[in-house]
Length: 122
Image 1 (cartoon, rainbow, N blue to C red):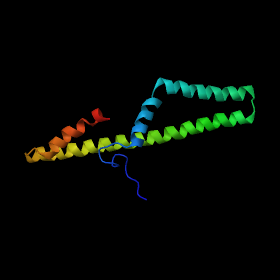
Image 2 (image 1 turned 90 degrees about the horizontal axis):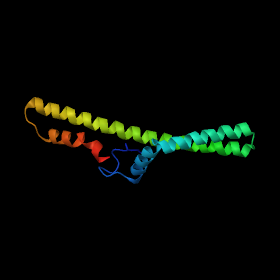
Image 3 (image 1 turned 135 degrees about the horizontal axis):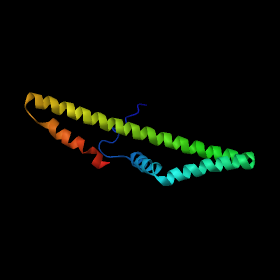
Image 4 (image 1 turned 120 degrees about the vertical axis):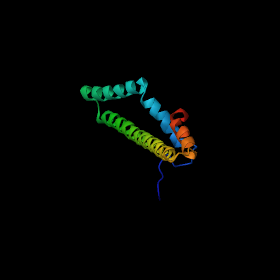
């Protein structure tokens, strides 16, 4: 099974996972999520200090592990999308520079205009 880069899947249309990852990235960078994480860590410390049963320690540890794995998936998806967008912009700049050097602006200049405005689409 060959996996495709997230930017290559589905053409210009973003799939369900990409939309979910984008929403998740926005939420995880919010103060609400930071407060949730601080609360989760405080709960874990409180469980340790209070000397509660091992089940509570396992629950707190499992919750932190689940949050960590979800953040890792979101971070990797965001990194791949960003990497691909930068590469597309660099390719468009290089093509436009070549066309300009040859003195005949054409398709590469239009591609460059379209690619530079990519952040407005996301």
